[in-house]
Image 1: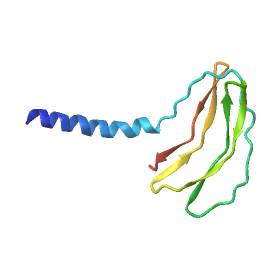
Image 2: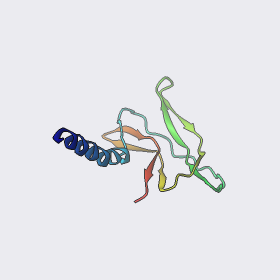
Image 3: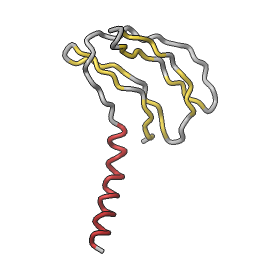
Image 4: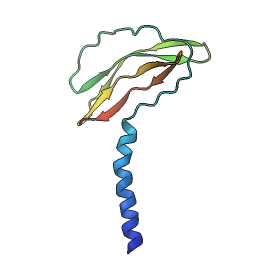
Length: 104
């Protein structure tokens, strides 16, 4: 019986910790070329959809940034989309992909 309670407690603790991990953006500062200024695309709103903005991704083979166009994603109840972003740290650049997060 104690083993069962212990396993249940571990499972519950893990279920509370998982959303915390999913909300954090992960940056890997491994690019030495700054991304160009973003391109602002005009995409009309569509009912039931969220516009995910375009962004630059780094193409390691070409050693250059390439533009990825924005897109429509089906809206998710109780969630919002966090745009992808680049950050600079010590002359290196890191990218965090766009992601869905739970509303607070």
